[in-house]
Image 1 (cartoon, one colour):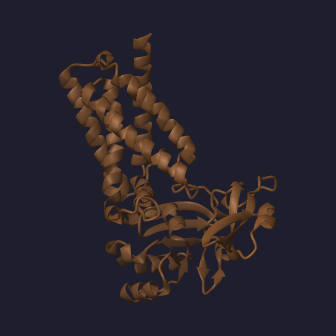
Image 2: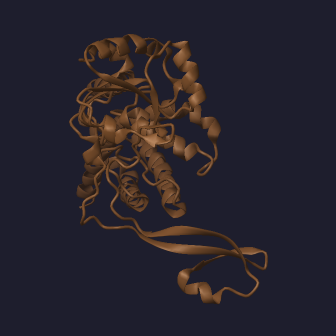
Length: 366
């Protein structure tokens, strides 16, 4: 029985770590954005780690996959199980912190392929922690599947393949796109809310200063507010989250107006997406005006999409001699649309037909 539980734990943990790692390795930039949330001021307040988010993301996801492979192979089982234990303890702490303090809404454990609530992520990590402890106390039952030579070849091959995959997707695009802006999806349809969709339940909370201390009162507690209390603020507290459409923060704003209803009816629209012009790749930016002219000849409406301010837009339009307008959209939404900065998205009446990294601009079909 002990051996059965140990081998089951070995298979379950190994396969789950490989799947979880490969999903994130398919989109390491997306995982790096999640790490930036953890490093930010509202969470752990360690902003000096933000520049290393991508390197940390790559290291962690490759480590996940390699440890999963090593566990299944029975390769260096003592080192592997100790590493898994340390990793799952760290993940369990992070997911508990996210859930208890309600700071990071989605841990990103399975990237955009599967969204888990913080408490679901924590529960998953508790199960994994239990199974890894089973392996920890039964290490002698983890036997290697092959000879040392074959084990070494398989382990190092897995590491090399993971490193190549990470390099490829960063310099091109994710191999599989799990995001709501993937090719074939219609942006307007992704923003629709079904008539029978559950609505959010929101409670108004009033904040009053009582004896120098801010206290919260709900509507039913208003009669209990002591005389002389000073009103400070009012906020809405979400009791139950309603339906949130897959695309809910997309905009095409300029001079106070939103043009998405108009542009998403265009039969030929080329969106040049650069969420932050100051961080945009210079080689990619230098190709934009040539692409703009080519697209115009082919009957396309060309627009830029950015979260940068008007001063930065004017600066980069002058620097790269760009003759198309930029429209504002939230930076998080633009990062979700495409990972490269800049990148190119072709739409036909709101339906995404092609997405291309700036390194693959020659593959853009106009």
